[in-house]
Image (tube, rainbow, N blue to C red; front, side, top):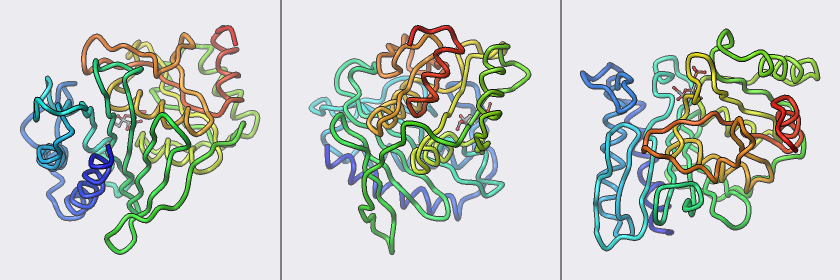
Length: 283
Ligand code: P6P
């Protein structure tokens, strides 16, 4: 699996260069979720596809930007489900964006995720890698190389609250729950970029990121294979929790379609316990 992480490190620098130099216009195509694609989305996807095509352990690729499964190497072992440039529409206002990688062995479902990684393209390029053992590991790009910085552990209770989704479409008990956190003094930290928003909570000691089911998106917005399950591993390995609106661990999700979404809550133990009470879920 180390060869996959080395490939991600190479890809990170190429995508960062593309972000800084490529045209930010829209392509004339849509992704599998019907969203307009930026030329940068297409470019980032191509960079990743080409890089993994020469990584022998990779059997298949599933991209958020494309439909279906791309077979690379029948002798390979892992399927990588990835979002090449999550939050790409934030690039034109110079906010941080990211790439997310879920590394699966076997059927594409939560229990078969063996590792995950994400890259944050911000003032610095940072990479976090999680496996099923130990804490997630943080790396930072310094002079063209990733340096290991340390492991990530979240506190039992944090201070940051990242409430996703359109507030007018939240259900009453979700709105009361979010308001209660702010009444406890939580600080609003939400950029609209899942990767930097979740990265910040992990690195700043904890809190809650929520993207609930809403009246306009009852199954949430964030994709299970490319976004939700990979970050669920990050949060659980950091000492936090990651559940859906029924209290099920997101690492137990079994998508029926590669682009399925799920309501998702990622946080420290205190905030997740509080959410379960608000949602009437047995703690
Ligand atoms: P909303 C970006 O488009 C994205 O997929 C995630 O990165 C982010 O967390 C979410 O959508 C933001 O969605 O509805 O809050 O703007």
